[in-house]
Length: 448
Image 1 (cartoon, one colour):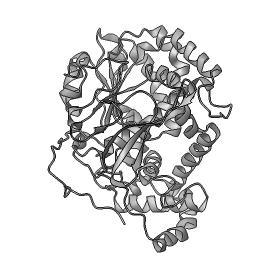
Image 2 (cartoon, rainbow, N blue to C red):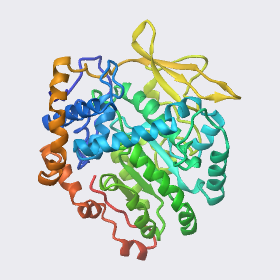
Image 3 (spheres, rainbow, N blue to C red):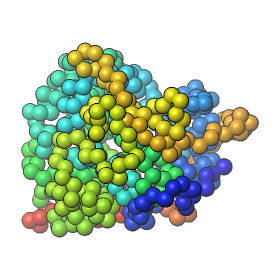
């Protein structure tokens, strides 16, 4: 049955960040996330698990081959239509297996990883008001020469032990180690931090500041193919990992560039994008992010520059216990594991290869404050499997005869909005004619 949303936890008193972003969103976060599902959404999740298990692409465990928060990403991305979610999940699992993503992440050369990290979205070490990790991406670092060298090195270098499918551009494979870091390190870490409004909700999203200042039309054009390939692969295989995207420093011709970019994403992602005029940057960011966590470059207090590693949050004091001389997280792949003999703690393990030798080093431990809900009983699982064939057969009929709104919550009505793609674009409210005529970029007010 659907999980009840807890208004508070029976835990020691902590400083909670009250979020205006939760109510500002048309998608009403955290609805549709684990521990905040409607009955219909929970029913879709149970049917999805039954279908995946019956078709041999998911194991119930314990532990399960994929946790429920991961499965829910596919359901949200496919508007709670089980068959569509299955198709995307199966394609992703095939792609991951063909390119040995787990091996790539765990064996990538640290220098190759760092080259990728310095070019693409970087975690600042901070979070937004909902506890979601905050990333910054400065596009101007991706000039034509840099991208060409990056792709050339990625195609020729033996930077990990992983094999590839020969179809995915080899120059892009290192980029996906960064997505693995998001889903296997940053998000699990932020899930265990309780100084947020909904600590019972696992974190599966990221908030991004995308700085396009100083980028000319020629550079945008030269980056088009590279960015399109990277964006489309990420959308296909890492669904629902992006939340709000704040585009800052848009030049007067950005309406032309936006015409390309918006076609790379689904309408849900498009509707989460804010394009900010200079006078809107700090007021808008402060709506979603505490000023102390906003980089100084954008009017905040955080002394952070693109390229450096994340800055530890003072809120971690007394929570993170550093090991082996560390006082911050290093570069490279990291994962979270159980601590033997201490079920109430989890440990951060740094992986990758350095000078041809594997790295496995404990960076820190933190309290285990969140654990996955207990798996349903075997009887319940059998019942779910019994209805799976019917659910599978009905999926196509549902898509044709029933609106996806049958799976929406009464409060969000998100699927009705998403069904009308034109409305999703209109909510972004970019007046392209006005944008190109103004000396400074007009802001697009996304209905998020």
